[in-house]
Length: 317
Image 1 (cartoon, one colour):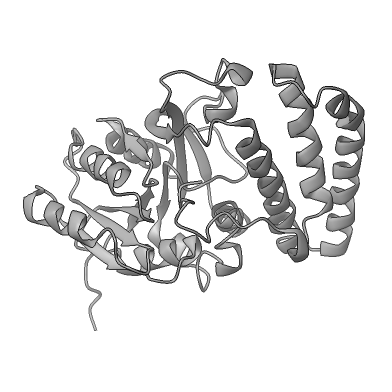
Image 2: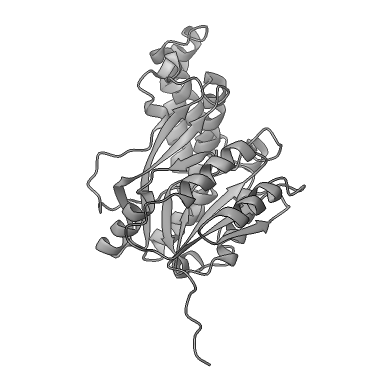
């Protein structure tokens, strides 16, 4: 039997959860790409809400957009399942991921695909810049460093792993394991880093692209210190989990990372306690370092934070 050729050059996948206003902007940015490469591309929107809350919006776009748009319902709230549903419906040899709170720059698709072609990469990761609801960074992080993903690396530089917001991956590499995103990470996050570490360990070539840019909406809530403390704690837990999972000696790796966490938390604990009432930059830094260390120590399932279990959360965290 002859193989059926792919229908598109690339699929853009957007998982979403009950954020129609932001989703509308994300879709618009994907539809309005310059596409100077002449790519034949589709957009796959995966609605991860049990009540199919994005369906009306997406169907309106399906009727009006100049590119094919596919609506997919995955009613079980789990970011890994949502990403898997998008991959299952892709009809292209490459997929690009952006989150529902991101807007792609007009040349984003051209840049990320050009980098993939130039360096024959299996996965590419681009720049994420913040778009603050308050129009400016919070006082405790005035340069917005904690809200930016931009590395001082040339395009094509190798990366050890990555995250899905503003990324591209070969479809065959993405489907090289069952899942491919692990639902065990689906309510805590880090499913993307676990996935891309698998791609790397499978021989995949992961690279950086400094010209592919998306803009991520940062709400007032997400710019608060309390939110960032929870986020850093949760991310540190995930960091230990996926490194232990992919280790040849998981127990030794877990003990090593827990010891690192203990040293990190211990080093910053006293300054964090003394500066607890304050929110100037160094005071916040001490607290973030303590919770990052704590996440490495208390990474087991009994202590995990779940960011994807209610309508107040987002698949784009």
